[in-house]
Image (cartoon, rainbow, N blue to C red):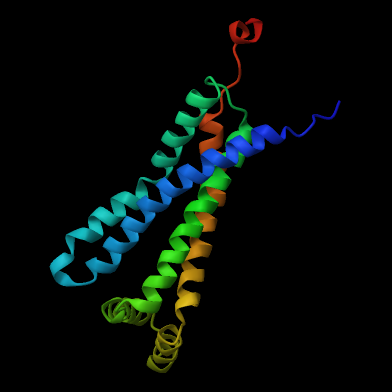
Length: 184
């Protein structure tokens, strides 16, 4: 038999994913802001905190999924529903972060960030023995990127992370009903 799509379950999962996407998005926005501020030498320690926040992503998502599973679903959630929740949560968090990044690159002073980025690329490319003319051409292309292009580049990275982490987190957090739960 083909299972019917349960619209109520989809609506419920999306509602929790929106809320938890806002939480994950807030973590990412804090990390992004600290990263942008850490390019100035006097705020260097913020870069470390930003990295810790970024690395906390799977743990934040797993904790939120566990809360959803235990609070709303009595401790039972299928892999498919877990995966749907994770993908939706990543989507909403990415949407929030992308908007903030666009606004940052559009309206904030990005000079320090661009200089930091330019020097980082220059050192990396020089270490690869790439000719100076090609390095300068690449640096010029990067410097000409529009705010929407920067936000889109970060968005793609976030979506790749979602594709990699979602099935892993969903597999770890899904729970089947026990025989005792099935009887009741």
